[in-house]
Amino acid sequence: MKSDTKQMPDSFPLPTKPEDIIPSLVSRFHSGDVRNQMAMYAPDAVFIANDGRTITDHAEIAAIIGRDIKLGLPLKTNVRHLFVAGDTAQIVLDWSIEGKGPDGQDVRLGGSACDIARRGADGFWRYIIDNNQGTAVRQPA
Image 1 (spheres, one colour):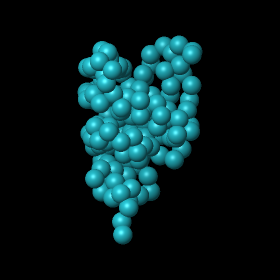
Image 2: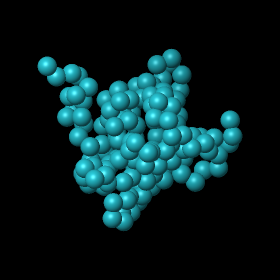
Image 3: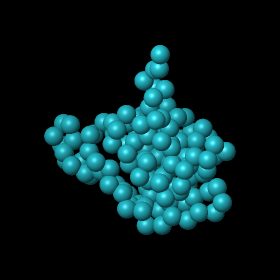
Image 4: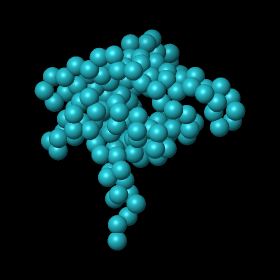
């Protein structure tokens, strides 16, 4: 008997080419299940919080990303640059999440990200640095 979590990766295969990283991420975001998106993160991945903290705990990363996913709004992206050196890729993209949230309030999130992904020994690309605000000045909490 197969479990639902065992079948999850089949629905959202991990990217095997750097140009497929963002389309995979967007599909996973739109699935509504943060577990799908977290599969895109390497075990040693870090997330840069809006206050500039480097977050390494995957449960904390999932909580932050999960808040955005729970809004039920589309994630829009525009990849500006994709630079690849061997098994490492830098992705510079503009992103936004806009619309009416579940509470009826206007939501306007976004930024220009500068992310780093790495191809693992298994051939799949995963995030190692998720810096969704890129070079923006960070404000401590």
